Length: 62
Image 1 (cartoon, helix red, strand yellow):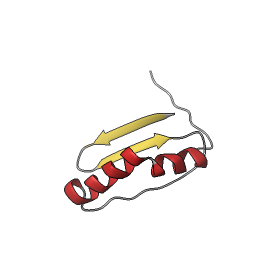
Image 2: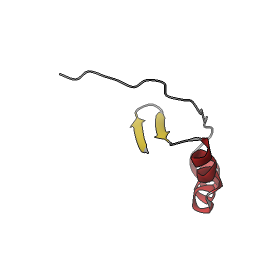
Image 3: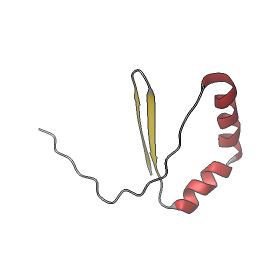
């Protein structure tokens, strides 16, 4: 459904999914599994995954 990313001293990427089934399907996607393994071996020393439900999303911009 969407993606947000920020890079400074650390990198944070947030992806938005329709439901838990969609997340499961992405995790099992072959191309994603290969990229995930490459990331573990070549780029990342560590990472963390959080799965959370967004109850409300709003903002203000002038």
